[in-house]
Length: 201
Image (cartoon, rainbow, N blue to C red; front, top):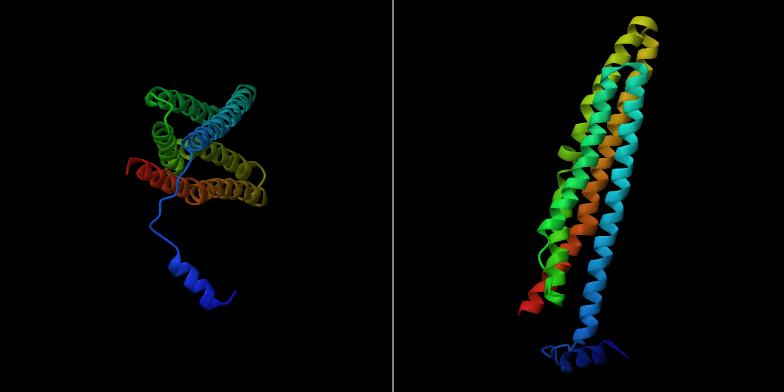
C-alpha cells in the first residue's frame, strides 16, 4: 500500500466518530489502577517507616553506648521522619473522599493521591532530608574535631570524605525523587485529569 492509498484511507475515515467503551470494563480498570496505586504507596511508606525505626534504634543505642549527644540528634531525626510518614498517611486516610465506587470517584481519589505524592516528593528536602542533617553535621563535626586533635590532618581528610559522601547521598536522594515526580507522577496526573475531564463532558 502506497502513500496515496494511506492518505485516501485517512481522509475517508470518520474522525468525529465517538469510541464506545464498555462501562463495566472501564470501571474495573479504574478500580484496579486505584488499588494498585494505594497498595504501592502503602508498601513504600511501610518500608520507609521500618527504615526510620531502624535508624532511630541504631543511633539511639550508639548514643547511649558512646554517651555522644550528637547521635541523639541523629536518632531524633530518624524518629521525626518515621513519625511524619505515619501521621501523613493517617491524615490522608481521613481526608480521603467518600467513594461511591463510580469511575469518577475512583479517578478523583487517585488524582488526590497523585497530587499529594507530587507535593511530598517536591518538598522532600524539608520533611525527609533536613531533619537528618543537624545530627549528621554535629556528629561529623565532633569526629573531625577529635580527629584533628588526636590523629592529625590526614585522618581529617577521611572524615571530610565521609561528610562529602553523605552530602552526595542526600543530593542523589533529592534528585531521584524529583525525577520520579517528572517521569511517574506528573504524567499520571495528566492522564487522570484528561480521563476525569472526558467523563465529565
